[in-house]
Picture 1 (cartoon, helix red, strand yellow):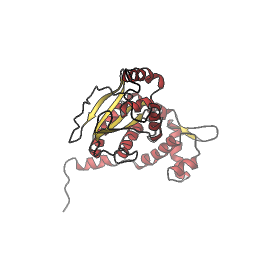
Picture 2: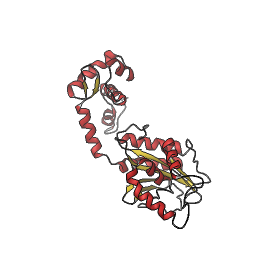
Picture 3: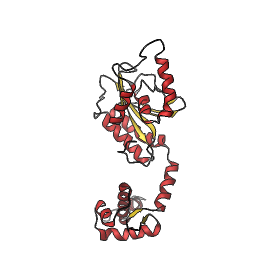
Picture 4: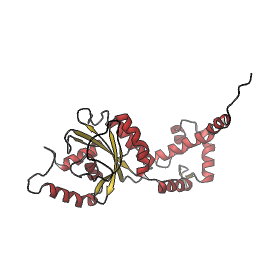
Length: 273
């Protein structure tokens, strides 16, 4: 007895089938992009897990359409069509939109509140907030401007933004904090420059019970294709259950999330600016 198919089932299955030769050829382009320099056919084929004889016809076709080009030494590099497609994609990218696709999963995985912050006229500003099942009762909402000196998010921007961009706002903030005191509202036993150096070393910014007692936070940077900081992804939660270790249960998924957003913006997600 013949097995009957639901209407559209066969066509749906057919649509899921790809063209294997395209997938194989795409691996060559991917490896060429990762190398980032002109490369010989045999080396490119090895990186893609195939023989040079198998890779050669693909490279000939890619040369014809402009996906790749060859220099005078016969080495391959990405060609004008790859550049055109890449620039078109980059022009349409919205960092916040790309990040928003991923932070819901991050909040679910960590069980903590997650926020996205970008640089605004007054400093780092929260533009998206994703709450867990049990939300934090803190005064944080869309539009909140984060202190450059006293928050994980602010210090992340102070560490990675060009100094001329943050210097004026940071000086104003420090002046307000130190008014009538010698130290202002600094972290005990720590200078700001020491904190910024630590952030660059670990690729993360963290605070423990400061500026809000009982609340810890870790913030990770997201870079664009040119290596410029475009936003920070912040995870925060109650100190009693929040893992603030640099490679802890919060930091690991946060890093993966920030690196994936960075990758989607056209930069190697493992790169630091």
